[in-house]
Length: 340
Image (cartoon, rainbow, N blue to C red; front, top):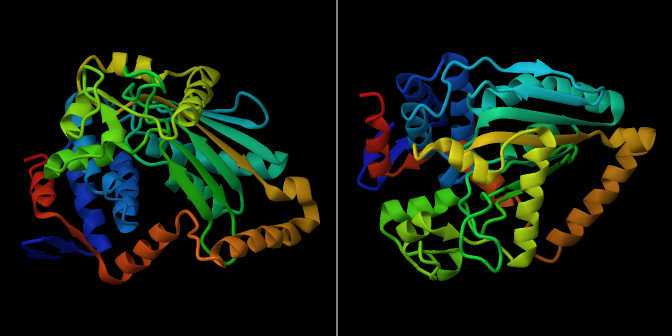
């Protein structure tokens, strides 16, 4: 590890050790700390600063505010033959997913399709780690989760939705999966927070201030309402996510989540729905031939110079694995103050 004016250079192993140590110092139990740290390191490794090691500060705030049950024990159940349900007991979602994923994979292979509901968990991270892990097992995967009510519907200026991400993973034999993960808001909330920390203006189409006026001030958007992407289309997708990962699985909507927070400023509380499909369920012995047809589509996209989603992350991953990462000096100082 080396320190310079621009930041602190670290190997991924050093970053992982730091994240685990600081999460434990914040009061998170060992298995939870390891699982949460892995998600943060993955974000930093893949060049996703808004979902990387900065999230240590977010996790620490939620722990100190009492939003997270730091030693929660996830409980796995099987409501139906193709379904898995994990009650996270109020802990972070990462360990609950780790507990439920093996059974989700087993059921997808046995039945062709399966679904995993994570209930009573706290979210602060991206969804691509989940769908990438499943696609790496040869499955097609989708994931959905609401958050806190920070986002206004199209045509309105008051928060109703969360950032409500949608993630998708497709297996590609012999190479990294095709993965996308995007918020149905115009931008991830963490990106606005990074702008606030750095004193930078945000584009006016990112959100409104508390009075419903367009603004370029990051803090005003954080205290007002974010916008959906694509107007009414993003708004409809946000509503879909609310329903799929809220009422459908017996968990909170984004409005209910922020009400349950009671002003503590913690991460969203609620549920996540993950679907896994085994291509062989439909295709049998012909599965490889049809996956090859999918590769022809990817080649047609890349052949005209277009970029596939996740390519930028994979390129950043290769650099980070070889060169490590650099943490901004101010962020590193804030991280080092955790638990002190």
